[in-house]
Each structure stands twice: as structure tokens, then as C-alpha cells.
Amino acid sequence: MKKMLIRVKAWLGSLSFRTGVLVLLACVPFYILSFAQMVLPISTGLKGTLWVILFGLAKTFQYGGLTILGVEGVRRLKRVFRKE
Image (tube, rainbow, N blue to C red):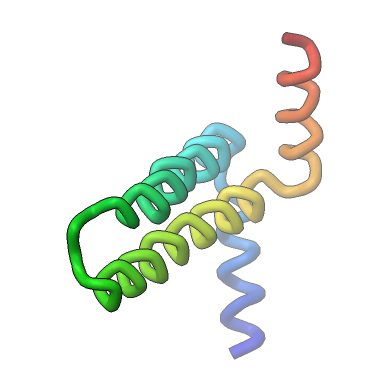
């Protein structure tokens, strides 16, 4: 199991900077949906289930994007936002 996780991390790290940014940006709609669904007129159990699924997807995209970017990618992204 540990070897498989190391291989997945290495594969994600080999993807491009642009892919990392896109995956990282994909977490935003899932965060919005995970909390926006609370105002829907549905049962509490279904709201909880939807929240767990949508919030889990948001976290998955967030950590996947950060893994793809890596330390240097995050520094590069910070530089872009500081210049503007």
C-alpha cells in the first residue's frame, strides 16, 4: 500500500504546473456546493450525505492540486499573486 501511494505521489508530481493550477481551482466549486446545498429543502440525512461527498471532493482536489504543484509550484503561484 505504501509503495502504491509513493507511485501515485510521484505520478502527480510529474504533471505540469498548469494542470496543478486547474486541479486546485476545481476545488472551489465543490466547496461552494458543499455549503450551498444546506439551503435546499431536503432531509437532514441527505444534506449530511451531500456535504460529506462534496466536501470530500473539494479536499481531494485541493490536496491533489497541491501535490501536483509541489513546493516550487506553490512558491511560483505566490509570486504571481504578489506581483498583481
